[in-house]
Length: 473
Ligand code: XIL
Image (cartoon, rainbow, N blue to C red; front, top):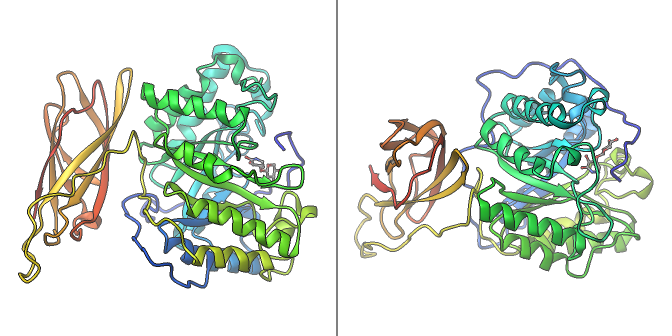
């Protein structure tokens, strides 16, 4: 499935993104629900559990009103099927073309959908010029590519597939032999650090296939993620493609495998779901996959790899949720019912998760229930991703449970000597070294009791230690 395939990508002239376009990826904490609603669309039903339901989209199909009608009704996350790949975005070295991908992002922003970026570094769908490079020249080309693409979409991507399909199917847990692998075993971590520096607000994912169950390949990925976490290499999520057919059925330990990755402190996502088949068997398998994600608190969403069967890269397998006419199949009803039946409801938050999760403190003075709640208090905790020479800090601001709501907050932190902040997101900063403080921006100042929001900043040197102060207004 990773071999180069005939591609049907077409380019359309798309409107350039407005500089004032809404930033979709940042700043919102998804709503919590402990009761599954009988929502009537995939996206709304997934959202009721704090998750998303997405699809792969081809830019040239957006003018098809049946296609875009289903897209905008059912889905709240979009992955460009081909338009952000290396061959599409940098067809000649140093010449970047974003027209088709920009068109998809503009569509998402206009319809309140978030974006998964796909894929920054991959052995497949590389432009021809990459094949003539090796060693340092190829490594630098990869770094330049990631920097340019992730910077172009900075603030607009919920999660990036930074590295795609880097492990082999040999059964020995080895890396896939590729030109990128030949530049040195550290190419994957360099890719992740480069992506973090370019867009610190995006979650950074590793994505692969044949990793859906516990096997040699998924265990090799697992060990890599564990090592990255231990060494502070930025990684926030792992994508499981889940291209399911009779040769590659849903493994019996699918949920357990998702859970073991989640237990490493990363989000997990089902990123390219399609299930060959028809009728009840296909419908039941869709339900099973949905149930597995819902049973894992850090499974933050599901993306199907296309809308109608005719849109599929494997259309002969009729693997999707809508038939060629755009009518929902039994698989659709089954997936929707499974979503509506609910699951674990720990809500994932947007923005990168950059380290082992530390539960924000929720204890504190409580107000007697009969007294109108006074203005709330707040606390803050930091999750740090540190690497040699730099860091990203993600700060969770939590309003004390049982107190009143707050209308604004300021967090104070102390940076060790030599450290300097280079940029921040979701907050307005004051100071770049020593004592620094961050105040809410317009959209994240009002927080109810017990709820939280996140902001972050990036810098050189060593990140802040200790518990930050939090003052509420
Ligand atoms: C596929 C697309 O769907 C096709 O249109 C294209 O011709 C080839 O790539 N793994 C991935 C996806 O990560 O990018 C691939 O998408 C499917 C397999």
